[in-house]
Image 1 (cartoon, rainbow, N blue to C red):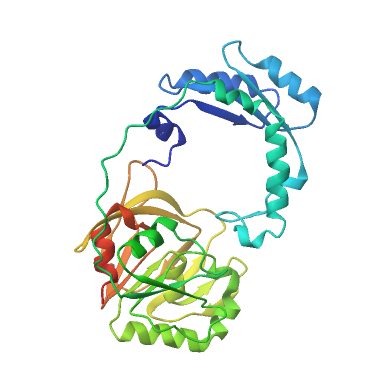
Image 2: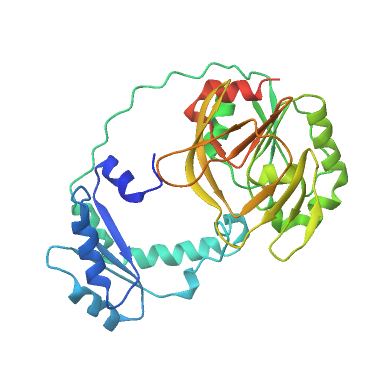
Length: 332
């Protein structure tokens, strides 16, 4: 899997719909995308955020004859989604999300997207039937941090862990006083930098996580989870708070993207694939156990820290890439 939309589209061999929000260069960009890569099957273009009917008509007239027009969506503040670093706000933070989706759905229904059904159907090669995972984590209770500070987790990871027999116990490092009764601990990514004070003030939770680590139990931390394990986190405004202190060093948020890439991690338990996407750096005296391998020419490698049963890095693990390795890192 690549971070390139075009490469993924070519691999799937399906028609591509271009969505563009421009003015005078609209037709030129559409022409360039349709002709630059001959493998890309451009079905047509949908104009986005147009100022009105006159703007939409101008864009339509700028298109080459061989590029199909699928209509226009006029600018509408009612469907705008609030953003911050690392993307839009999570769904549970947008109170009127359902209303926004309904409005957007009606707009799309009244556009030319209904013409998509006239395109030739896409056929995918069937993947070999997957064997049912062996219940290697049967009766293992895995505590998973899940709240506003830790909200980045592949659903496929959770599905896999359950399929392997694990019992998933969700908890909140923000609101709960301590860990539930668990065997293994999973700290996924998120926005700990937006909740520095409450994470710092929850001393009983920080102590419980450190005790879990000291007892030699499995602890897997990704990106924001890694930051939470450091001595401290400093945000872009210079606010600094102490965290769990399991890993010596400090995490510092940056105003620009630090890394974005597909990654792989070669562990004794097996190779696991995933991705990196973060706006922070860490400064630590700790010796790196190993480095991840970025996929292709994009991005840079990431440090991986292992001690006792701890596995921590910036890389978000995609556990279905190697179920056996995932099972091994969570097994007490």
